[in-house]
Image (cartoon, rainbow, N blue to C red; front, side, top):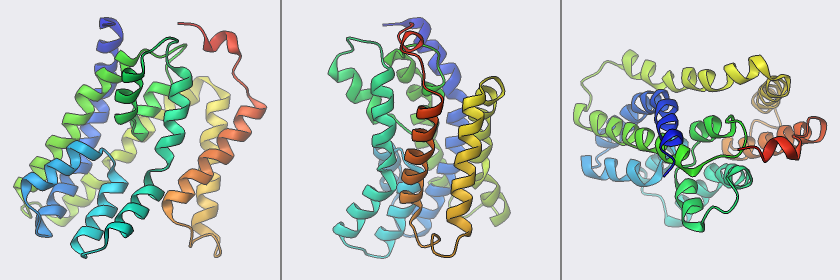
Length: 237
C-alpha cells in the first residue's frame, strides 16, 4: 500500500465528494418523489457512480421504458468512460496487476479522471483508491439524504444544489490551465466545440453522450498531435 498516495487521493477527493453530495441529493429527491424506495435510490448510486447516466436512467424507469432502451441510453451516455479508462491505463505505474486496473476503472468518473490525469508522472492506483474512498460515500450519502428529505426543500435550493458540481469542475481545470498552455487550449477548444453543438441547428439533435465523445476525441486528438507529451516525462514516478 502506498500510504502517501492514498492520503493524497483522499485530500483531492474531498472537494469531489462535496460536489457529489449536492448533485446526488437532487437525484435522491427525484427518485423518491417518482415512487422509488429509499434503498433502491441508494443502491443505484452505490453501484453506478454516473450522474448523467443515473438521471437519464431514472426517467426511463419512471416512464416504464424497456431494458433495450435503458441499455442503449446508458451505453451512449457512459461510453466516454471507456476513453478515460484507456487514458488512465497508460498512465498507471508499470507492472500494476489486472485487479487494480479493474477497481480503478470502476471508480472512473469525470471528476476523478480529471484529478488523476493532472497528476505528474506515473499514477499509483492507491491515489485513485483514496479519491474513491471519499467520492463514492459522498455520492451515496447525498442520495440517501435527498431520498430521506423528500420534497422538504424549496425548488430554488434544489436548483442551487444542481449547479454546485460545475463549480467543482472549475476547481479541477483552472489550476493546471494556469500553468500549462496546452491544458488551457484544450479547455478552450472543448468549450468551443460544445458551444457549436449547442448552437448549430443541425448539431442540436446530437445526444449529449455523443457530443461528449466527439468533443473528447476531436480536441484530445488535436492536442496530442500539436502538444505531445514526451515519453521520458510520462515514465517519471
